[in-house]
Amino acid sequence: MWQIMLMLLPRQVAQNGYSCEPRQYCSQISSCDEARWYLDNCSWGSNLDRDKDGVPCEGLC
Figure: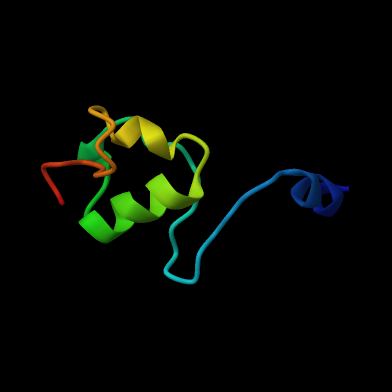
């Protein structure tokens, strides 16, 4: 039964190990590459670009 539930949960995971589990703060992210991956691939990624200039987590990038 749990296998069926896992198939129903959308979860994007890249080869580099990133996943779209939400990160609320840039302090939870360790690199600019990771921040950019979230921005480009996750529905909540735009939250990391607070000033909407296309650069996520300016302190890292």
